[in-house]
Length: 254
Image (cartoon, rainbow, N blue to C red; front, side, top):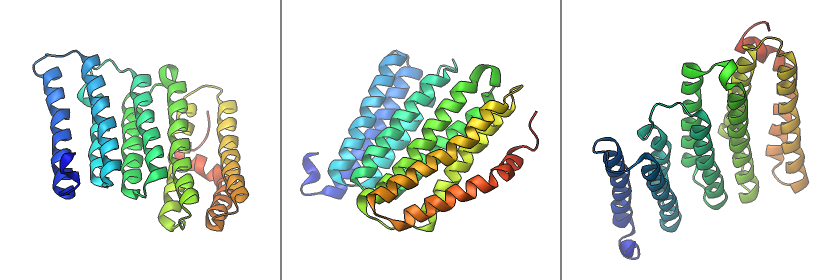
């Protein structure tokens, strides 16, 4: 950090390499040599992640934050003991995503948001396709998919509104894709239940309600007619096409 004033770029490279090394040294100490317990290794890696985010803000360099983010998402897999504790895994991912929300209010780092979006839904998708069972994980699936959906939806809207930035097509695509992933996983999770029509009805009603609330908040701010317009279009499109979305994610309900 002392090199920051004179050699900012060189100092940032050294810091990034140092933090990456700390992740792997901690992993080696835990897994290869069994020098430290899992809980201590986990605490160290969380501390490394927090410091990396702090350093990224101080240096005002997105690449440092990306290294910290990749390291943070890799922690549960590096330290996994095969116990399959889903709640712990996704609670940790949710905390990381909440940190992204904080940074989004302070910086205009779109790549950081896109990477978090991709990694989170990829991790969730791989878990769902490999280990999901409605009898064991229904509420975990619904709870954390809802949490991820809300975090990414609000993060993007809040960043645009607070910074008075234009709302482009990529932003609209991300919002719609975020909604589609949430609905697809929610529908398929419920679809494995017998007599789950009531839960499906709640899912179908909750998304238009949430979108309406977001559109209302944007209107109250009297900003971003683009956001308000797209929110309204997304609401009307979702409401009118939800039966078709059901067909896309699995025709017919048992």
